[in-house]
Amino acid sequence: MTDLKNRILNFVKDDLENIEKALTDNLNPFVDIITSVANHIMFSGGKRIRPLLTVLCAKICGYHGEIDKTISTIFEYMHTASLMHDDLVDEATLRRGKPVTQAVWNNATAVLIGDFLLARTLSIALAYEKRELIEIIAQITESMTQGEILQLINKGNLNLTEKDYMATIEKKTAILIQGACKTGAMIADATEHQEKALTEYGYHLGLAFQMADDLLDYTSETSDLGKKIGADLREGKLTLPVIYSLQKARGSKKNNDVKTMEDIIRKRDEFSDDEFGVFKNMLKTYGGIDYTRTLAEDQVKKAKCALDIFDASEDKSILMDLADYTLLRKT
Image 1 (tube, helix red, strand yellow):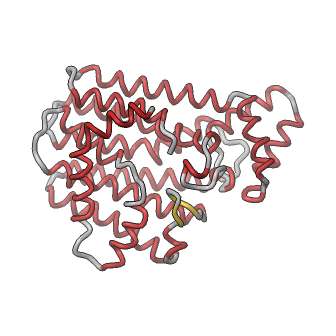
Image 2: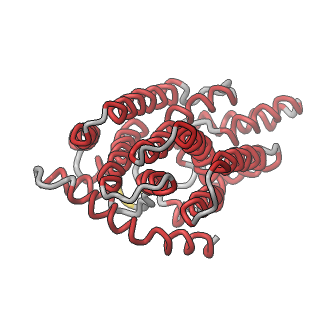
Image 3: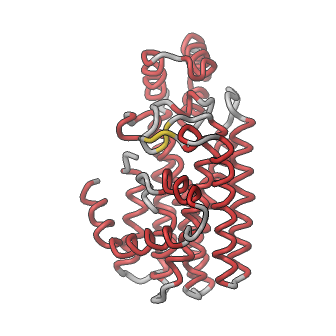
């Protein structure tokens, strides 16, 4: 995994530096607190996957201009705003190993700065003067909000299905990553065939990314993950490893196991570390961890297959590597 990560970072080093500059430049000059609050989360370890995808998808279509870096900031700002709002809704305490925004400032500040970042994406898009980009932003914003609402109303729902889960992560995560990739193709004036391929790549990559992220809650430590382990379970979020394992436990008719899992889920933030350990073991026993990983691997394969229309190139190789990295990352 280290070799893969280093290969990616070495290739995109200049792009990442330019993205970082664009992220800073496009927040100035505004009220100082905007920069301070945005920087608290945006520059605290984010991997810049979304803006990087925009830049790489433009390059694979032959783009050699400069506007891609500025446009790519749209997707990091949207992502950051969603994290700030998500942390408020979930009453989270940590993000990327640091106190969440509302813990450092207050709820009102977190809401308003998140709103500002969303508004800033529209200002950047308007300067580009392309209606299609505005439409992409509108669709993503609407979709992500629906995803958050679905997740909110389904908190603690012990009867949540895999279909419900997929609908949520499609709206919450996949559409944003898909939009970042599609925008890269649009910037490059790509052919319809190329844009369709990169849109498909982004969609499947987004699904894999969220599945892998949901696995980390049960396979990582706080020091690696940057937030309290078991955060999803503590917040009442039933992700695929849990949904699948519950279904299998019920099918096995081992009522004691079903009751144990359901009782721990109902406790939310009050279960002990020992109880969480028991819960994780049950996810392994009933195959939830392996099943989720298998589905994520399938989505990565689909993402990579979507790139088949492109000739071999370094940009294509890095996009393929990014798909593989989705499954191997620890944070």
